Amino acid sequence: MKAFLFTLLAAVLCMEQASSLSCFTCTDEPSNWNCLRSKVCAESDKFCLTIYASGGIGNNSGKRITKKCSPVCPKANVDVGLASISTSCCEHSLCNISGASSVKTSFVVMATGILASLTYVLRTGL
Image 1 (cartoon, helix red, strand yellow):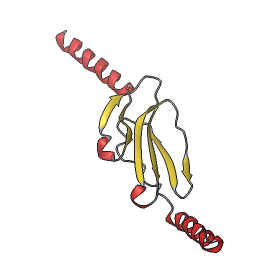
Image 2 (cartoon, rainbow, N blue to C red):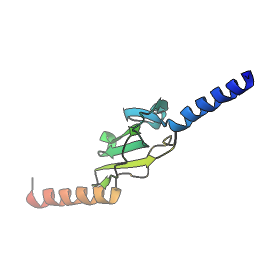
Image 3 (cartoon, rainbow, N blue to C red):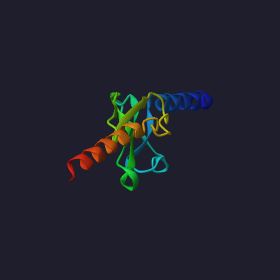
Image 4 (tube, helix red, strand yellow):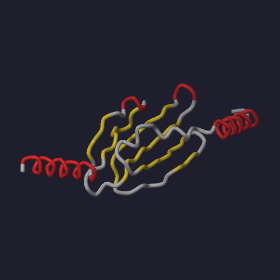
């Protein structure tokens, strides 16, 4: 009888763990190394979400990573040259360990903008 109760208890505990989603979490961190805390998500959360944002020029550039549990998976991949934002989602526990670093500032667009600004300044004599 004790073996049966022990087996039943183990089965119940395993079922509870299987239904709970866990994700890595952080808010506006400059490095993915700061995003290694895990959290058990709410029952309504179905995704682990990673948001990667970058922007700026030269020494004033930077990136920020946010990771969290989410009930929805927002698709956002925007690159406007000097700034970009990207999201990635996954659906199993601790699947968002890496940053969404595939989106980076477009240096061609940035160089074109700088060249256009320089040309304007030289022509107008400002």
